[in-house]
Length: 52
Image (cartoon, rainbow, N blue to C red; front, side, top):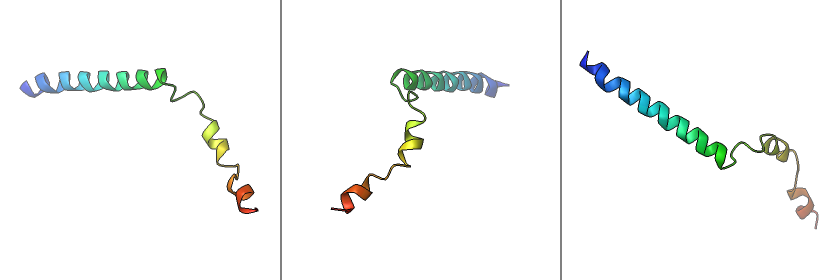
């Protein structure tokens, strides 16, 4: 029973820490352009420089 006295606050702290990390990533713009990286891999920028 005393283990719950340690585990419940630890779980609440880790949940709060995860929420703060998620909100920080939203504020810093991590999720602004989700499709950009997926489409960027399709463009071959090195092909133009190798033809010179």
